[in-house]
Length: 113
Image (cartoon, rainbow, N blue to C red; front, side, top):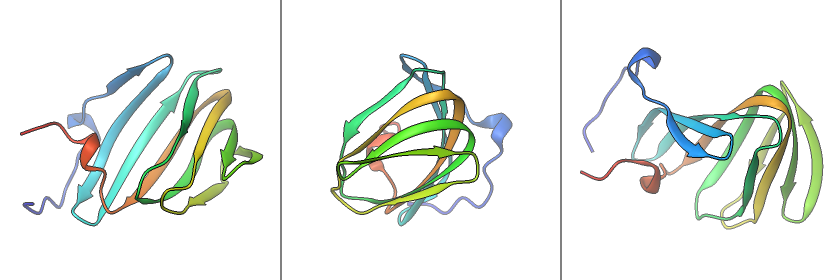
C-alpha cells in the first residue's frame, strides 16, 4: 500500500450507508485507519464483530452502546475500546458523530481497485 500523508476533508466523499448513517474514511495505511461516522437520531449501528481492534471517540451526540453484552450510555468526550471479535453495536439517542480508529485498517471499507 502506497503511503499517503495528507487526507483533506474537503476531498473525502461521504459514503451513505442508509438508515441515517454516513461515514468518511479520513486517513489510513496498512496498520491503522480513522473513520468519521455520522448518525441521525434513532439510527442503529447493528450488533456486529470483526477481527480488528477498535477505539471509538464520541465527537457529538449521545449513544447507547452495547459491547460484549454490556450496555452503557456515552456522550461527547467519552471513548470506548473494542477488542477483536467482540460483539458490539449502538443506537443513536441524540444526533451525533463518532471517530473510529481501527488496527489494522478495515480493508472492507475501501473501494475495490
